Length: 305
Image 1 (cartoon, rainbow, N blue to C red):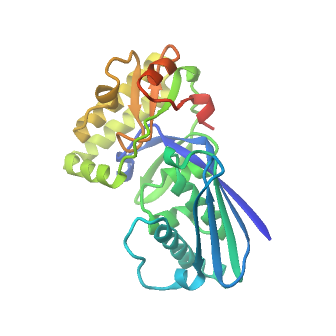
Image 2: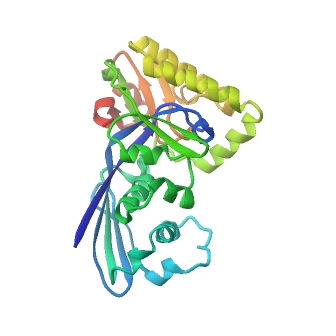
């Protein structure tokens, strides 16, 4: 028996932070993602091997079924082992048969992007496990990692989506977002991990009682981004979004802090200050960013599914 599953990576174009509270977010699945391969094992255990995009093993371990089925809480650390046990334990709550119907499993995961890129190492894993065990990936995410779920929606869809939460439930709308000016859009990797938990805590500290107003403003801008017919209108909406979030978070925009002399638009994606930024430029900006020390520059067509 061999089963193989695949999930897309993700990028959040609009709605960062606010998507947690019901704002509408434009998100795109990436051409990069993650495989999960399951074969039969033995000894009531799961042998786990995770490969990075360069073929190197970045994690390897063995979990006993009894480690997963134990009812006591997993130790509160951020180790990969404890994270995986948490996910598998929550998965077993949703489908308890998967450990009763086999003597064991060999599980291999394979990323097609470097795991430090922040394109969804965890969300693609959760969605793959959900596919394997035929359970709801959004519920598995909620019970293990938490989060808005837009990344799960990207994992499951092969086109851009408009995503929001309604009474805590995910609402996914496929949208026609294929800008004719895509040759002017680039993604630059900042190579700086940002703590999502710390960023979210700061977001809630700063937003206070203006949540409804912030969400309404975000939804209006998101629609403007979707409706943009030319590069100028798109850049204007993106800059407006960046400035609104800067005011909410009380943080400088990424352009102000890193690229103040750049003749174009730069927008943070996801947790501000880390992973990728979206760049809008009338001319290829590769030389500029390389001179600044940023060497991972990916065009829109190369990145977005």
